[in-house]
Amino acid sequence: MADLSGQLGVVVGVANKRSIAWAIAQAAAEAGARLALTYQDVRLQEHVEELAAMTRDPLVLPCDVTHDQHLDQLFETIDREFGGLDFVVHGAAFAPKAELADRFIHTSRDGFRIALDVSAYSLVAMARRARPLMLRRGGGSIVTLTYLGSQRVFPNYNVMGVAKAALEASVRYLAYDLGPDNIRVNAVSAGPIRTLASAGIAGFTDILQVYRERAPMRRNVDSNEVADAALFLVGPGSRGMTGEILYVDAGYHTVGL
Ligand code: NAP
Image (cartoon, rainbow, N blue to C red; front, side):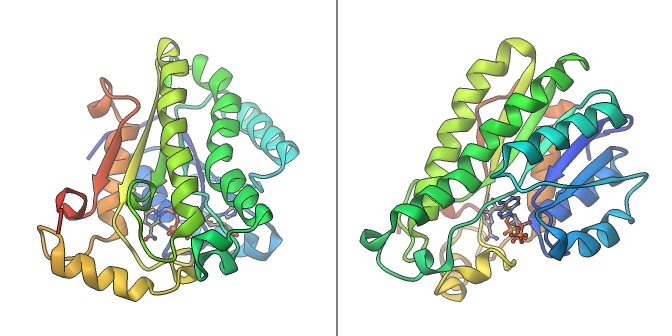
């Protein structure tokens, strides 16, 4: 387990205790980091505050990643309260439910725009605002969460697959831009895990079953396994890595049939 004592991080994408971002937040807090956690709107504020209270001296702040003003306020507050930032965990993703049940060819212009905005552009928007805070700490690490649907077709994943492809390309371009600043940008590509977001994908139970049958390890992964890999990417053990997509999927992505 990485030692993150004295490190300052922000985690975006905690909705409830099943959220992968929450597993990462817990692991980071246990490793000694102080965290800022965000909630998208007041609907989730109380819930995120309850979870955050399990970590040491947390900051809990509102942030809808589609609003520049929210992002500006988030990073201004973190700057004021923390005086710098060592890592960002980006776990925000969304596509309108209708886009995840119909044929891909029926993707609406709005559905496409929203999915790409929330799930991919938000990483760029956050990285730009995190950069000055990380420079003050001599560098930093940005980690996002992706899925194999970026590379291969999974029925009903549809526009989220396109958004994840854009996210993974953004990881590489950001890694190139921020490398000279000693800021690393990587992603964990997780196998399917039951969460609020995955519940919106039609046929998700079938995807879990196929992984159990065909992955080399013949099982699904859990969010703690994803969190451990995310912590590795946040921490010093991965200090020579950037622009990487690290798969935590029981090996499923290696299998052809
Ligand atoms: P989750 O708990 O539902 O997390 C998704 C988060 O994105 C929620 O906190 C959600 O907040 C947030 N979000 C959506 N729109 C937002 C916005 N406009 N501004 C700020 N936050 C927003 O589901 P999860 O499965 O843990 O997802 C976390 C990440 O892991 C996602 O990037 C997902 O694609 C990725 N991932 C998941 C799986 C899986 O099988 N579960 C596999 C691979 C990768 P609200 O609930 O308020 O909308």
